[in-house]
Amino acid sequence: MRIANNILRHSLRNVYFLIGTACGGKTTMAKALSEKYGFVHFDDNWHEPPYKMWETVRDLKYQKSAREVTDWEAYFGRPLEEFVADMEENAGVNEFFEFAVVELVKMSQHNTIVADIGAPADVVLDISDYHRVACLRAPAELIVRDYYGREDHREFIECIMRLTEPEKKLATQNELFRIGAERIANEARECGMFQIVRNEESTVEKTLRLLEAHFKL
Image (cartoon, rainbow, N blue to C red; front, side):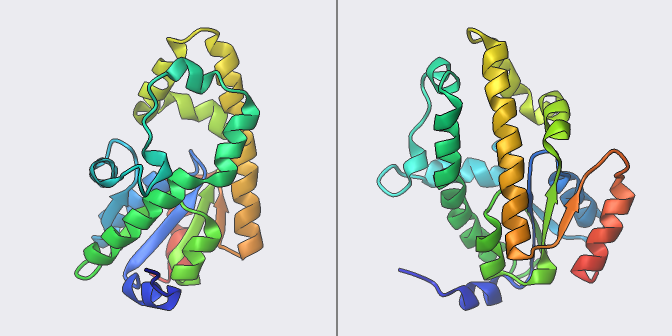
């Protein structure tokens, strides 16, 4: 079954999408918009209810990413090229996004939603309006500096630090952040998506004003 993009666009008319890189400000801005305007925050963080629900639904028969990692040493010990290949395929992101779209359609019938979510820029623009989508991103150096210090990423860094040669494995992840940040920037640029790039001068207030103007709030 395939649902046409114009039908999805109509059904998601009460949803604002925030996509982008790690440490770009998606969650911070989603919370700020929710608090100021009474929006419902849809968060795809693996600790949050939407992703927990997804874990109960996904099935290896339909979703390739349903296969659980059982050997973290082998997973994080892979060469950079294998991680990049996974990024190219992007199966996990797209599979969760399909699930999220169904949930967002249901949730947005009686509420305005701000979705802080990982999704390809072109896919989001196909099913939403230009003024309801924004890409918030950070350059690689800020991601590497800030990512591991976040409370919601503690499990990630603690897992790596328990493995052999943790510095080598972290170096691979840092290079992956650089490649991913560049890819997201290029995708957003090619799609003509509205972007806000975090820098040392960025503040919650400044970024919120830019989003409010773009979203026409």
